[in-house]
Amino acid sequence: MVVSGNVVAITGIDTGVGKTVATGLLARALMRGGVRVMTQKLVETGASGISLDILRHRQIMGIVPQDEDRDGTTCPYVFGYPASPHLAAAREERRIDPGVIRSATRRLCGMYDLVLLEGAGGLLVPLDGETLIADYLRTLGCPVVLVSGPRLGSINHTLLSIETCLARGLRLGGVLYNRYGSSDAVMAEDTREVILRHLRACGCQCPLVDLPDLAGGGGLSYEEACALTGRRPV
Image (cartoon, rainbow, N blue to C red; front, side, top):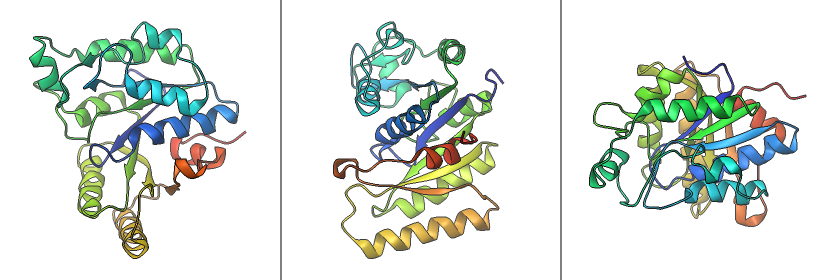
């Protein structure tokens, strides 16, 4: 383990499920509660310069880009080709070194109370030619917050992600149920109930928290953010 309890990973059931907004909202809620929190992106593809997801975090948090954003600490690898990290790196004849990411995380841990580490895609996305993102997160020993939602197909993807956490020794800290864009209330409620039942059937007592529509002024409370990240409210 290279961290000491002050890193929480934010992953999703798939790409485009809302990890970036969820990470920003978690950071904002914790920051408003007095926690010195910073977000980090494991790797970003389809961009250049400062990570677009990191800039979105800062926008949601209501702060300007930080020095750690400009020097690459909060996202050590940014690739232009919009693909899985291993392929995007290969297209630029580069290779992702997990040690570089760990060093950046370690630096942030020394500066902040908590680091929220947003992944790329889902848990079984290749980080490099040998390591899956789930494998990398296991080496950190940090809890994982899983972002899900009510769209068609998410039951299968969510249950598979939960079982991946259990099978690979990842500690599931909670599930964020992203309701943004939900148009079928019946499906949304049923999907949420199926996920909750599966969590309990697997012996997971972690919270399942609804993530309301950010466009409608929604967000997370400090207490909800603490429950998901394993912090004790003060």
